[in-house]
Image (cartoon, rainbow, N blue to C red; front, side):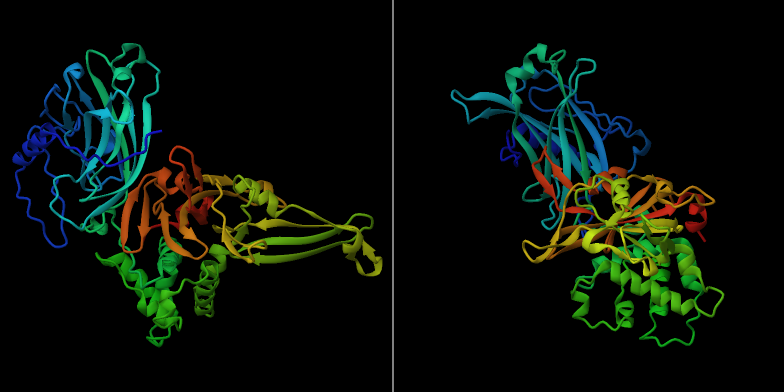
Length: 542
């Protein structure tokens, strides 16, 4: 398979088309510091079809179209599909650029050209198919990571397009990426293959992009939310804080905590109030130094990654203690506390030991498990105590018994920790499992309850906390659906951006991408679900 690469050849046709676009700009190209992006379409540009005229040698009029009609004017969208029709293909001997289409506030273009395949003897002709980003920018410090599908559409009903995928960090040095030999030219011209009709082909791109770096990105303007500054290695904390902030019922209680007499440097409650208040009212990224200082951390601690689950437990414990003796007492367990029953049941005598335990989170084993359902089955799986491991049943003596766990109550807000980091006895060290593990947007946990509760244990996914890297380190981000309206956002420290649902969910399953031969080291390690019956109460805005 041909590896994707940068286009190292630009023809006069493509260059002329660029100049035409630039000449039609109505504003100057001067950039500010930090730089912004010119986003003026060519004259005649019609948002309803993605672009207007212009052309290159050997090609007829171009037409643009897109499949996301709901957001035609949204130039900061995270993804888009757009197409480009090249006509008079039998006379096409040069290269051409499509009109621009905007994703993440950057202009993206399809670049097509006729190329020699130097790897064959004699040399054969092929279609060069590239995706270009921000090609006219004079800025040297910008970059944008994106993944894309490059498609040659079929004209035959029901026939799938020919597709190749790319992943690339676009920059001024490498502002295009794709395939110099996408498909053999004669295969394209052969009408039996179904790609050409009336001497024309249609190229299509579906691109998903991260927010650009080195170019000003206004999180508040684009999403309505702001991020948190990273002190060095506090991205894990930032992800958790955003998750708790958007648990609105908790935020409301945090604001009401009595902190008037608290020590400004030592009060976790006061510091958290300030962080939440700034997240709600500020237009720029919020600092967290006072919060980490209230934990007793010094500067070095802020450059060390702490255990996520332990940090969350400590923070909730501090809030719970702060609320004791006030009208807020019980808020934390009311939101996060569930109950389970640990039991041991003798098989040959009438004796059962039962102990009720509370939990604020559940650790799920994912190794060898396909999804949440299988992990919960594993969690409540019974163990037989027999032979040398018989149960001491007091007056009944040593007995063969069944040991297990049953859930008696699930909380309104359910924190699930996926055990991606586990001890490996072979290497005598902690390793990260990047195995594929699926989780649904809606789950039902009734089968794992000892007996049904008053309302179904149906949960809606609210947040996906993601780790990229290995057991030695990495980066943390969180995807949140703040209003339970299907509009997901990605919180990456100081940058907040809208994202597609599949980026938040399916793309964080982990596993292997066979199309790109990539092992995903970026995957979910913690999930936050909210009970459907109380979701309006938990997420109620104020």
